[in-house]
Amino acid sequence: MIHTRVIAVARDEPEVDILNEAAAVLLGGGLVAFATETVYGLGAVATDAEAVRRIFEAKGRPSFNPLIVHVAGIDQAKRYTTDWSARADVLARRFWPGPLTLVLPRTVDVPEVVTGGGPTVGLRVPAPTVARRLVECVGLPLAAPSANRSNRISPTRAEHVLADLDGRVHLILDSGPTTVGLESTVVDLTADPPAVLRPGPIGPAELAEALSTTTVAPRSHGETETRQAGPHASPGMLSVHYAPRTPAVRVESSARLTDVDWPERAALVAFEPIDLNHIPAQVVRFIQPTSDVAAREFYETLHNLDARRLDLIVAVEPPAGAEWDAIRDRLRRATIPYQRNKRR
Ligand code: AMP
Ligand code: MG
Image (cartoon, rainbow, N blue to C red; front, top):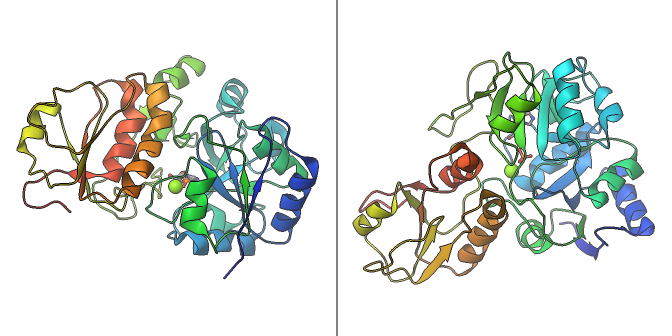
C-alpha cells in the first residue's frame, strides 16, 4: 500500500519546489495525479513502461485501453509521432493547449503499454499551467488517463481522486476544480476523413471548420462492453463506463418519467426544466442549459448524487443537437436505458 500525499499547488503560479518534488516522484517511476482542464489525470512518465503499468494496476484498467500522452507543446509532440501531418499541425495550432487529443502513428519511443499494443498514440497539450509546467519540469511526456478506478466517474476535484485512489497514487497535486469538466475530444488523424473517436468539448463543427474542406466523421459506439473491432476503433470506448455506484438509468424524454417505478430515495437529473408534478424524486438536479456549463456540472452532479447513497438515479437525455453530443455520450456510458422491473 502506497502512502498517498495531497499537496495544494497554486493554479496560476505553481510553486517551483512542489513541481520539482512531483517531477522527482514521476522520474522515480511513481504516479502523480494532477488537474488538466478536462478532468484530473493519473500521470506517469510515458516513456517508462514500468511506471505506465502502475497506472493500469492502480486504476484496474484493461490493458487494451490506450492512454493519452500529455506533452508541453507541438515540438515535443512531433518527437513521438512518425507523421506530423498538415492536418495535425492545423488542429494543434488552433486548439492546443486545449481539450483535443490527436491520434497519430507512434514512434518506437512510445511503449506499447501506452497505446494498448496499437500502432498509434493519442497526444495532447493540456491547458492548465500546473499540468504544462509539470511536463516541462519532468522533461518527458506524461501518460495520464482520468484519475479514477476503471468504470467509475471521472474526477473533477482532488477530493474525488483521493476518495477513489487513496493508497494507489503517490502524490495528488490539488489545484482546485477543473474548468472544462469533461474528457477531451479524440480525433483519429490516421483515418481519412479524420474520425471523432470520442465526442468532447471541441465539437465536430469546430473541427471541420478548422480543417476547412474536410468532413469529420462521427463514430458511433457498440452497445456491448467488449473491445471494438476495426482499424480505427477506439479501444477504450466501452459502453458502460464512467458510471456511478448508485443504480443509474436514463429515459429518452421527460414524457417517459411517468413510466418509472420510483423507489423512495431517487434522484432526477435533467438538462431542461421539467414539470415535476407526479414525479416523486427526492432530489432534483437541473443542469444548466448551455452545454459549456453543463459539461462542467455533469460529473460534479453524478459525484454528489452518488455520495448520497440513493436507491436510483434517473436521467433524462439531453436535447437533440451536436452541442450535446459529448454529454449524451457520457450519460449513455453512465446509465442503462430504463426498463420497468429491471433497474440494473
Ligand atoms: P482517458 O485517458 O481515460 O480519458 O481515456 C483515453 C481514451 O482516449 C481512450 O479510452 C481512447 O478512447 C482514447 N485514445 C487514447 N489513445 C488512443 C489511441 N492511440 N487510439 C485510439 N484511441 C485512443
Ligand atoms: Mg477515463
